[in-house]
View 1 (cartoon, one colour):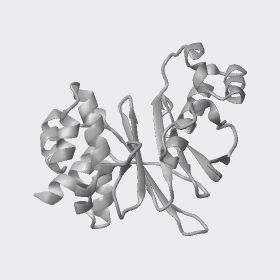
View 2 (cartoon, rainbow, N blue to C red; view 1 turned 60 degrees about the vertical axis):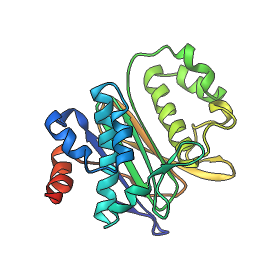
View 3 (spheres, rainbow, N blue to C red; view 1 turned 30 degrees about the vertical axis):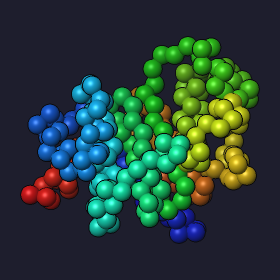
View 4 (cartoon, rainbow, N blue to C red; view 1 turned 135 degrees about the horizontal axis):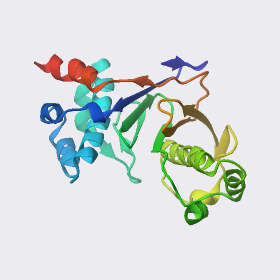
Length: 227
């Protein structure tokens, strides 16, 4: 956790759900409020269920460390579908491939994670600002595409207003950038070379280092604690 000059803190955790066994799934699921259990089980495929379970467990772990795990019962989504817990810090969650990432801060935050896979940039170019298009085309298209994409998703999550004017309404090439008359800072995350990830905040931090939380640790800190 890193502290800024204004005493804001930020926490970033990630977990590889590929190591979450089927035997552990049901007991861990029971730790969640019923409405969140239903949300997890809504998904057809096992991997999707594990990703969503992992995301909610990281949130629960953060609450539990502060003695506020009962606040998970207040988990809801605002008018633009952003997850929120009233009377608690801002938080954001993302998942892709086998990884889940979670961040929490007293500042406004957003996080995005993407597994780098082959893509057809021309089919996606309409989502980008003209300056971003030129930047992506002038180098390694795949890496630059994902670099900009995770920034764009992260800032939209941090703003918490959804896509109002379209993804091409602003450029993410600067750092900070100004959107809605507010400065937003980007923090690329290094976790796994197969992924691109970024945090966006309205606060300036010296450095953000993500911390891995293993499924085994989640079991030890959450499940065994309840026994």
